Image (cartoon, rainbow, N blue to C red; front, side, top):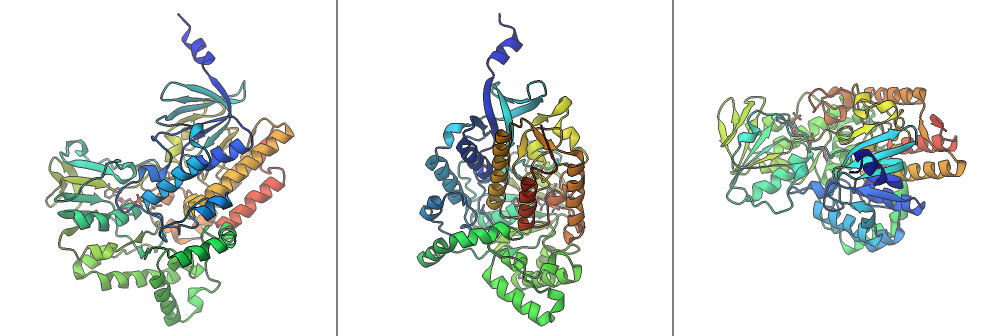
Length: 541
Ligand code: NA7
């Protein structure tokens, strides 16, 4: 009989880099690391590529970024060959795009699908990461690259009796592959964040009855998604280089930026007129291509918030329902602002009921449906649009251990501690793509991902050229960065409400602002400076 440890050791495959995840980040990381000539293995829990777009197949799932920038910029040929059908790309088309990218650049061959990384432990004696999968395989890697996504750890609330429900139930972020037929069904949706707001209008069209369980009313802006004409596609493709360059240095990685003027310097009528004209265009530009004081100054923010409140009143026929849907008491966009396609209009349908959980809270889930303190809402299907353990969850759900066996989860028990959101002290040679403390979810994700992967690959190239074997942040640099991230957030209105940006949606999660809010272009400049100064703030050995 072979000694178990010996056998495991002998079966350990040695590679340069282990990559976790096959979404936008994992695919681009594999592409770039291969270009550097690194041997690698990549692991993905799903059966195929797609990441967020593999899992979030719920009706109405769509990106809120314009399609021509919600894509890779690393290949001009890809950019010119691929044609998006709509302004905001919907889940099936994004998934198709990522599958195309995987085929075109032969990326699937690097991946092991249906494989979860369960542990990754840094071995000080060999200076390597020992990566273990749920299939019992072991890999020894010089670099560990996490491409696990920011919103990939689904959160189902701990409502008592969940297991008793006799109907079908799904979380939006773990949606089944087969089509769910809502025809003739009584459907309930818990949650009115972006996912709920996208799904509700679509489900309402076929369900016999839809009950929306709303805890906190949300602001939402119409996306006005439309098909892209051949002329528009031609224009975008001709200008794509300039558009990309603009995004790379803009505040949120999008093809627009805040206006120079501030709302409070202008006459209220002028602001109202501008908001109305931008509202007609649809999309995030209404807020994030608007006056910069909207996100800093409560008085300015109120102008935008009241504008939306009046829109809700004008759309929703029943005044009582309208008032229940109107968000009060927190600044607009301080919770992630959804884009919608007829969300508020949906509440004018005869087959849709709004249950305000502030008036009638959920007591439990029962066999027949959802029990509030007033009645049982009978359901055949229950949809949890209840969000994610954002940014840290996807990392801490893996048992990652750095120097001296310290687990990342333990280290981050009071909030994530990173330098630039890309590395964490005590975890040498581990790189996080769009980790906590980087702009990530506050910008256009593919732009954030490309910037991180490029930076990481430049860093690895530098290390290899310099003969450096380890890199990890200095204690001081990491501490300063963490304080800077919080300081910037505290200057905005984002900290005035409980949201997943602050981890406040997860019971017991420390209230710490998770992404970097200083602007994507500014962040890129900082990262470039760190690299130019020989990776200032990092210890290279
Ligand atoms: P979000 O934005 O976290 O929204 C979750 C929603 O679920 C939100 O309305 C919550 O209400 C609600 N929720 C959560 N737990 C409960 C319980 N226990 N009872 C009732 N309602 C609950 O997640 P999404 O998936 O919509 O969006 C996540 C991001 O994915 C999105 O921003 C995009 O970037 C993509 P609450 O507001 O906490 O009162």
